[in-house]
Image (cartoon, rainbow, N blue to C red):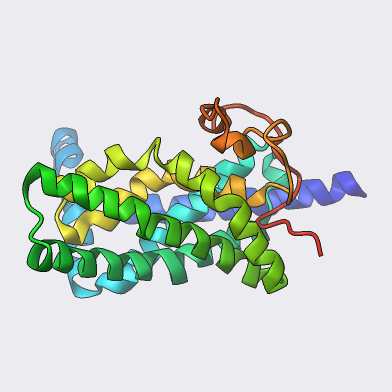
Length: 269
């Protein structure tokens, strides 16, 4: 019975992945379908990526909030699936409900909130604080890491807990458990990434750049959120983020170690 259920889940998960992948590839490959007749392979290799970017930019300009919401939802879905894979789960063991919760966290949380943050912070940085040049970039990164970063990490945990109907007291306990480890872990990734974010990337494209980097970060975040309440650094590589050898957190991305069998914010009532 269990094997039959596993086979059914594997079939469902594989079908979903195939349908989504084929849909995306078809959209990307046919962006120039009306004008590409007679193009050489070299022309298609150059024009298709460029025209997909132009198409994305046009949609972004027309509907910035919804475009960024969908972008973040996509990244958080990919990140959670990678996280589950690093936990040693096969395609049949992928928790679709957990993936859906991460998708919704990106769609209703990270995308819209990041859109507001980057537009608002740029206005403050440039016109109020007058932060310019590379020194200004360093200050921007420091402010981001001490305000927006921790705020979003805890919002992510809160959203997952609410979607699982966990008790508020337990959600806040989970937020307290993960706040410092995630800040320490983030310092290994985000300062350098945000030098590019605030130093080179136009404000309208910052979320896209951040989302690309977040494929790595969301994997860490989702795995930390999935760790059982009260796990010690000796029991889980991700829980060791705040320990002396916190490179273990990053090694867990490529190690086929079963970090936990629980999903999302596992909080004991």
